[in-house]
Length: 114
Length: 112
Image (cartoon, rainbow over all chains, first blue to last red; front, side, top):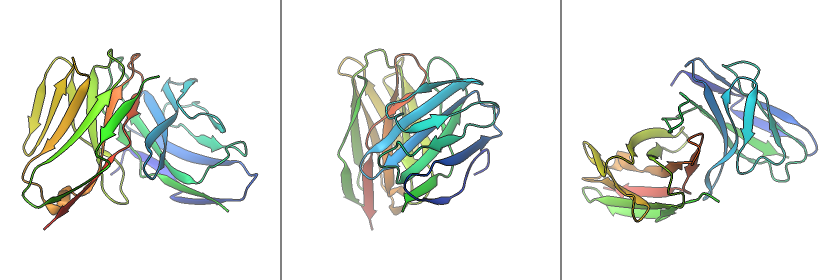
């Protein structure tokens, strides 16, 4: 299961605190994605990036921020503005083409707000 | 906006039976349709995908069919086994080809 990693596996946060989730890949993929997974809700796209120093909002970007300073890394910050941050967060990467390609997922981070 | 509807949300079958999961999409420009399997506590993994230039694709016990006119595609699993028990997600690429839009998932339970 190598190639794309996320840390930590479990994260606890107090209300009002920002927290950053790590995502790293060594697949030389251009594109990276962040999803939020809630029971019965599927995978909802938060942010994505096709190239270094560029990223776009997904369907549920409010209360989240990202950066893409290196090709290998796409960290996600959950800010205090996110009203219901407790969820399972998945990072993914793919070769970028304009027609869709397989996405490879990391093992996920489960965030709990206390 | 772009949307993918997936049905049913849960599906229970006996070992050896077939299972069918159906998805519809809203963006007629979508041209790539993958299916992912997520076992309990694990990450989603691609099991099969299809592009809009073909109507059917098969890989052993798994097949996917695509009807572009009706904007729906289906996953067919034959001779189901207990290890097929998982959550299955369909997806469609957005118009720009930059991201996948996922369905809400189907929890498949195969009992022996």
